[in-house]
Image 1 (spheres, rainbow, N blue to C red):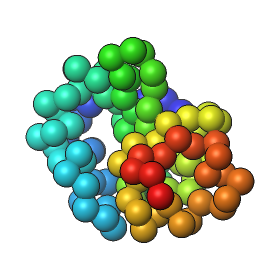
Image 2 (cartoon, rainbow, N blue to C red):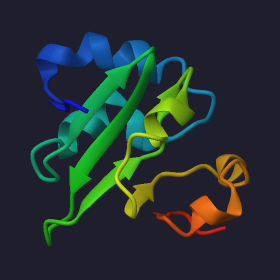
Image 3 (cartoon, rainbow, N blue to C red):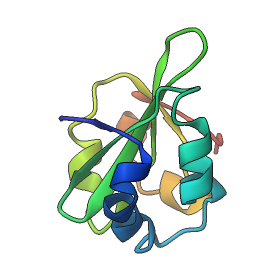
Image 4 (cartoon, one colour):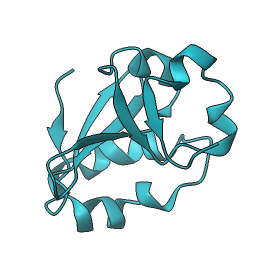
Amino acid sequence: MEFKKVTLANVDQILKCTHVSDFSESNFTIGILLLWADEYDRDYYEEDDTMIFRGKSPHSHLYYSYPIGKNPGKILAQLPRPCTLLYVPESKIALFPNEEKTLFDMYPKS
């Protein structure tokens, strides 16, 4: 997966995926993404009209957003295990098989 930096120059590409999200998450608004892009070293990866964001905590721990777009399962399958997923809508937690739930540290918790 080749991640790109979230910058003003790639807003159009980011918006094409955030606009097709089937859940509401204020952390995916372009203003919030740009505001925190440098602070959390925020990157994005886009494939098949689906996007995922990656960031780094102040302690250099990598985390990922729940993918938004048409094919989140394809991107989730490419993530390292175990990993931390943030901004997981409650409606999406049930989609993970029980054995997969142990490989993701998901927030919010179910």
